[in-house]
Amino acid sequence: MLDDMASQLNQVKSDHKEALSDLRLQHEKEVLGVRARYEKELRVLHEEKNRSEEEIRQQLKEEKGRTRELQGLQQQLEDLQQQLQAMEGTRGWFERRLKEAEENLETNGERHRQDVQTLQEEHGQQLQEKRAEMEGWKQRLVEVEKERDEDRETIGKLRQVRSASSGREQKLPAAPRFHTVPLGGAVQPLFYQQ
Image 1 (cartoon, one colour):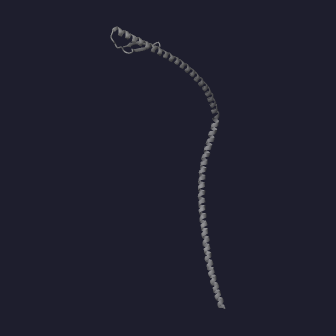
Image 2 (spheres, helix red, strand yellow):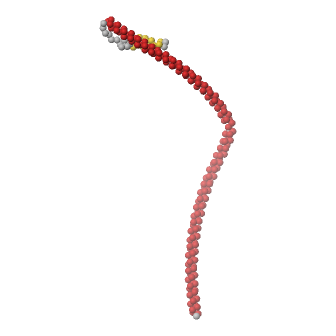
Image 3 (cartoon, one colour):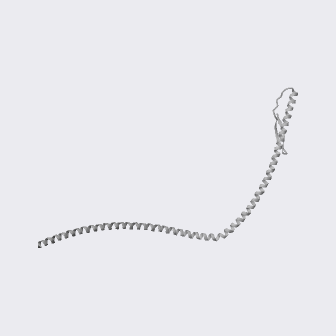
């Protein structure tokens, strides 16, 4: 009976050792799985931390750039405010000068309108005079052409008389060439050539 008990005890010890070994192996597997999972999560967290740090660095850099830009704009704003104050100080002078310029412009505009009207009237009068003068010249031209025709007719008659009196044909130029000089606004024949 003791042998059976010893045998059972050994069996129980062996089962216990085997169960303990299985438990130990399972525990190690679980520990390795948990460690792998935690390491993976830790790696992801580390990458996120690095990404966050890089984003924060980039934001900080952009913020510094904006700060510098803002400082430049602040300086420009101060300069513009000073210029505005200076311009406001001289605004009254500009307003007076503008009023004077408007009054001068109005005066000059009225004077210009009067000058234009006077020039138009003078030009119209000169134009009428030139038209009258041109009509006179046209009339004189008609008279000169009439005189020329009469002279040609007289020369033709003289040729016939001369031809008949001499009994022979003599050729004369078809028309005399007058050399004229203006005398007192009228064209007078100076001489003619055959």
